[in-house]
Image 1: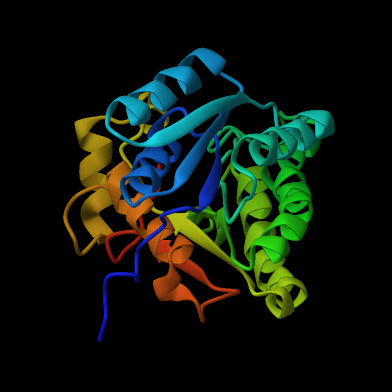
Image 2: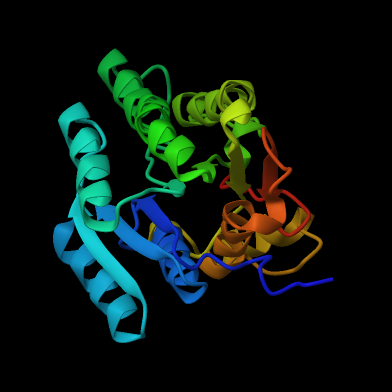
Length: 259
């Protein structure tokens, strides 16, 4: 068996939204390490440029493109600029997302907040899938990976907006697999458990971490590279017959922010 091509991304171009930091940054770095041209897309252009420069300094090929996923013209510009630069798109990582996890009491939030979370987490992903699909079909290779969350299956207070948006991503992914499959475009989703990113560090205490690990067989929180590895699997040829799947990367258990 020739294993040399299983994870080879040489000559392929990957677009990563929210790629400047955290899990998105790890995804960018890992794809570049396996040979892909990487587009670091983020609304924080300074941070995106920094990540892109680091990839290039380490022998990879990368550019940064400013993108606010709440604006359709920015999504179109992202794809157009990528194709202009690299000629094709084979991989899309829909990583960007947001929400007020633990701060979404229906007694306190406004309808506009609910709408914005869905526009960011669901609508922008669907639109980018629509925009990249023709380019993937033309390239003869396509892998779309959407960022879900353990919140998509967990039940907790004050998180109904974020959690329902992530559940929508799961079902959207499974259904789009039927639309894109005939064109050899795979689409999958990944739901991380508690991962040591900057966002988590703003609320994490030793006591909270201990409580979160109570029901986690692998007794540590996730690292960005743990999640990026799952993204790599879906992006690479080794998963060429895998589509419509949602995989949870969570140390074998559940971690929630409530004690």
